[in-house]
Image 1 (tube, rainbow, N blue to C red):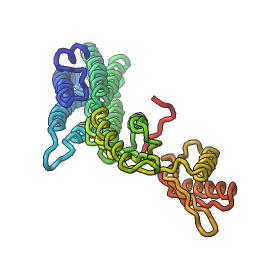
Image 2 (image 1 turned 120 degrees about the vertical axis):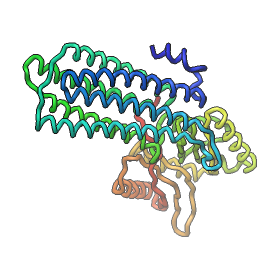
Image 3 (image 1 turned 135 degrees about the horizontal axis):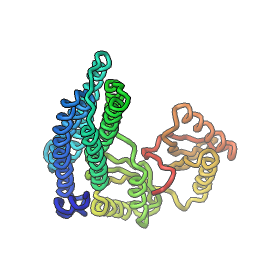
Image 4 (image 1 turned 180 degrees about the horizontal axis):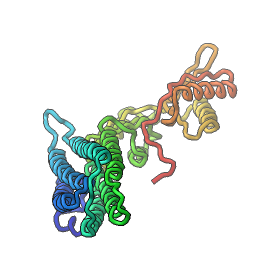
Length: 396
């Protein structure tokens, strides 16, 4: 069904990096969500009124809020499509994240209202009316919501949409809520025990937790998050694939929406190569990256000594020391400076993100001590910094 709807309503659906195609995906997901949730709201509200069930009616209004969330998603996707202008030189792509956050607010609000109603139901329970028809309709609702979750998750992954991912998570929360409602009706019908308020209370907590999870995931790119390990490798390997580039470090990616990114990176070049030749290479890589990866890349050029035997020897010494302490450690901007009575090894030491201040101080001391122990003339002058990459133990 998902592929049928995509082929039917999204022109050039395979070109998911195209802004117009992404908008078409968003419009399709929003319209499908609005229609399904409005139908579910009407049916559940009628059943809730007939059965006198607060949990069923709360579930109905939850679907109504989902319809409103789909409308917000629709508006957000359309606004995110707007091109760059004088006030927003990087476009409007981040509006999509804001729309997803608004959806999370809707979810949390529904959870709070359900919590309040459930507490009242526990304090003042009302008689339920058991109906197999209600159970059947609600079971069908669960199936619809499961499909909506898969539908939005599939489309969200195709176009990397936080709004659709949030909508999919919300739908799975509705599956849990409706399933719990079915359980409360069945318990009353079989054993005559009214647990409607307690079930509603549990569902309200689950809904609020889902909303908080959506808010956390959608705020992360707005606040700033580490670079995905796959993206880090893709950009680094792209730059390092050019003859004349020895290595890269200090890659930072700024996200301005799912399809708009700007990045900066330090690229190491041989110090003996003419600076004009290296600069021409850097310019070419920046142009190629914009064309091939769709990323506006700014490259800082770092000259590296490649022929001085003493520098190479000390670099190898430092590499051995770091490998023995923690294989995840790395260094860059390495140079050797002679003092009156000592040799200074100056470099930046890159440590994993899980290193706290105490661990950073400890590793600094260990590196200095071991290098000095291997060669008493050597003293380390290092700057310790964290990687900007969200590390992954396994490559993609």
